[in-house]
Image: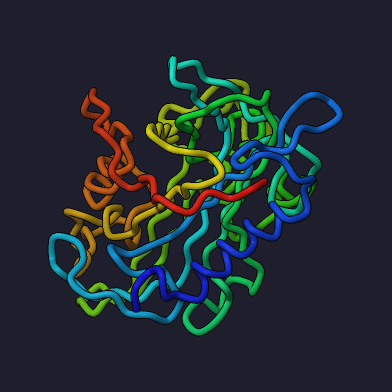
Length: 300
């Protein structure tokens, strides 16, 4: 099934049209301006595996260095520090709008699993949109971080509002949240593998004291996409690119199953490179997981 035929891709597009339909009529491509003088912006995300839409229960062949077949069981991630980019290179912060279930203080949880089939550990609720406000302008790109900001990352998640209260996205108060949670079954000997991206090397003065300084490895991926028309284009997360070059049949002995962001786990190296995160080699590679998908301009 192609991406354009997939019902979930259509549903995400319909959500965007519905949001646009609720706004007062304005010229094509011009976002609604709020009484505060800021304009509402919506950035839709898609999850794909190569040229196919991501779906729980679907098996995707020929992935990774081992050309393995995988069946996803989870795909969720936090997006924060979103900026809109203009043609001159100026970055304008996307300010939070009215709080909603999926966003808190500029941090949004994107949820592509629907709780069905092998994704039964998830929930039927999904979110594929990042929303916020910024001064009206002609923006040609976006920049965002995959991760939770430090000041929110090491709090008691039981005391936080949604979406920072999702237990399955939290490791421990020292390490903080799983910035990205991708899990899947593989036809290789490994059986099931997990990709949990989060901060490591987090030191504290005692077992009960809060973190007051950044972790040794923050492991936040900063993504910048140019040549994008807001109100028309989507941001695509490509799972095939995330696992490109990775061994999906076997797990490094005496390490966590899959990649849990440890620097001594070679299974993480290609995944970090694909996300544009330094894996301790002193260089930041160009990310390849996110790209722009051309769409149909929406009247806001």
